[in-house]
Length: 486
RNA sequence: GCCCCCAUCGUCUAGCGGCCUAGGACGUCAGCCUUUCAAGCUGAAGAUCAGGGGUUCGAAUCCCCUUGGGGGCACCA
Image 1 (spheres, rainbow, N blue to C red):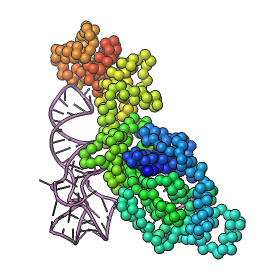
Image 2 (image 1 turned 45 degrees about the horizontal axis):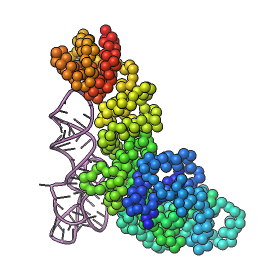
Image 3 (image 1 turned 180 degrees about the vertical axis):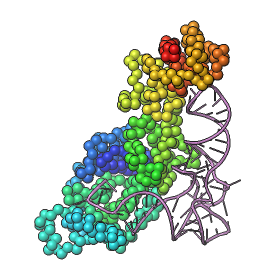
Image 4 (image 1 turned 30 degrees about the vertical axis):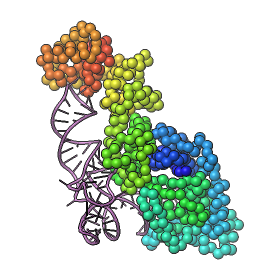
């Protein structure tokens, strides 16, 4: 049984890089009928951010990445919060100390900084100098008795070649002499990531650790802990990173980095899944559009690339437009309504009394023009407003003065009042006839009407727009345009 | 400074020794369609496969070096 985990630390928002890693884990689990576990790595009490865990879980839920064990989903390997597993880490640390594979260290932070500074200036590799390992026994007992602040360090064996067969990168190796005695248990009694993740991955019977490349350098430490404990290590795969346009680690200064910001901007979950999957993975040389089901069926680690990828927002936008266009009208309308409910600041205020039928018609007119759900507001406002804001200068088309415009408005009004059924076909016939009689180009005449009716230079096709707006509203707007001219 | 990883069009990528005078997608540009904006369709430009050495009958593909980029070196994860 394959068991993978996503191990977020509740210290911040759900970064898209982390969420993509979660998704790859999820895909891998689903692909092989395994379990996807969420484990909360809350061992840094100083950096806990309230609400962070909720938004991480919300991001997963938004994308449909359900977990089989974890917060709110009890399982046989819990608890799934590291802060509730302290006893485990302490007892394993004791065991390591007894076996002389770990030891107490009483060094002050000041001493450690000085040491590092000295190593830097001497151009030496930085790392702990084993000061406390080499303390005479009597002094150790003194220190211990004095109950000084202490941490526990892992005793890194010398002269070992540490080899990893990475699932994505192949063979990677390190020399243990270059690794120092790192801290495994902090002075507040909490474990560091290195200890906690190893202990939990083992106890939770994780089979594959798929994590970001930034973890690669600490993997030899983890491997050595497994060895010291005589445990089999899981398999590791280090995913390529996601970079900003300047090729540095994607961060806030590159714009949106939280998955939930993308939700608010109006991207669809399907888009995000599809797009993130293509950042570092591909099915073949031509398939770009992949549903979640296809991904689950086709995902494989050997098609994950090694090199980091730059987050290409233009392609994301294109893809979101594609997904929006592929939806059926009812689904899209419901999506928009839900979206507006959740993000009122992106919503247009739809007056009460607007019928569902009217809304559907409006949405059908903008569907293929929509890239983001958030754009709907700007695109459809004029359908719901009583009065539009009209720039008089914009009303006058190239080559049309006030008089010509007024005349055109007047005859149009006359025609519109007379038209028997106010629908696209009739409007088109009637207004195009009128257009040719007026000796104005289509661009001039229809451009003027578009401006008078919508207040915009561009809009959905004019006749369809007019049908939806309805005769009364059209007439009122043309009259209002007329009076603003005279 | 030390360690590790990576390297194909601007970007995401295909390629796993001969199908490559390097394929697809986004973006860009041009044309068509057209009442505007989109969408759609057609086409174009765009990569001496980072550079240099090998190995081989043959290298984008294997090896080495150089260069460049990234990541890591905490009582953070």
